Image (cartoon, rainbow, N blue to C red):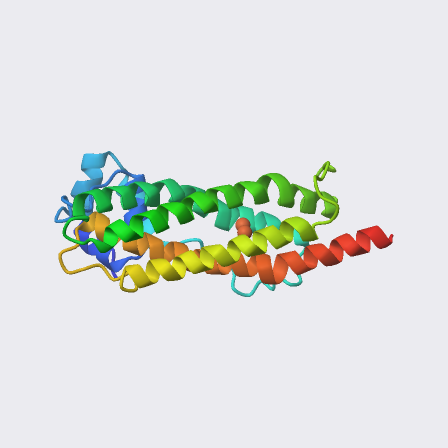
Length: 237
Ligand SMILES: [Fe+2]
Ligand SMILES: [Fe+2]
């Protein structure tokens, strides 16, 4: 769509999937203040409109689809996972947590499925927090030291196969939780009377699901087998 300063923030939030996240980051009210033009909304929040237009025009987390991660150096792949997927998750976890709590509190009476959805979503976000921390503090530093691009670490395991098994099991648990979330939320379709926060929650969960699918694919299917090969080769030397 054409993004003009006269377009209302409500229209932009509905048409551009990553717009709600940008608006929240810059404290632009797209919910009750959705009928304001982008120019007026930016003035109210004290934001430079050109920054918002540029962010709205850039596809989120753009990656080069031509990169063959099976051939890229392992340390480059690890840094890509951290910079793209972990950074995104650390931004989204508190935002989705707050949205879920608020939407269940405000709309739980009229939409009782939200009361079932809330513990599943909060449980998943909690699990992901622990999971990302384990990768960042235990497995990935070990992998980077295997690559020789980071200092050696005192690993608390005999081989990476142990932590990789745990990470794979946690990936499966996350996939199952996402399937339950889809089932309880009617495929993440907001009801007709859903407010802006309700819609932002479902949109955010759908985006997180998409990102998590790619993130888990890169770790389970590409990175982990390569780590085991690298470890075996380094022990054969
Ligand atoms: Fe990860
Ligand atoms: Fe992971």
